[in-house]
Length: 197
Image (cartoon, rainbow, N blue to C red; front, top):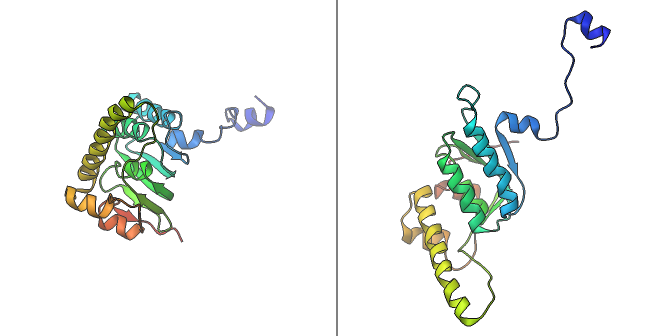
């Protein structure tokens, strides 16, 4: 303790906070990456750790900010299941780009707490997956392709409240679908748009 802190009656300052530590303590996580098992693991850990805190220390809400080009649907669904299983409600914020798995994860946020900025680009598209191998291996993988497509449709239905026919025609047709923030609200992917300037 220095003479100055002793004289002022203040405890000595601790080590400086690491970048992101303040956000972690405030219950905020910023994901600006593609969806992989490696990139989603710290987010899954963050949600579980926050849920394991004693009730007095547990935040009332977690905020997941997403700016992502998409990636692995399997990694995204592991994160989505963790979000949906969280006792702490999770607010999602779309920033920059929410594409593919980014949209799946964004819409998994707590209803009424899915926020977009006006400049967010939104891309919705059908499940896609590259695969190689022998003929019998490829036929076997078609089953997983079908299952993943079904999971996506069910997820869209649960999160948007839209009928499968509408989802297939408007949000998951054969071609990629780019949406404005207003359209994302119209189709119940998002709940509100927050102007930042």
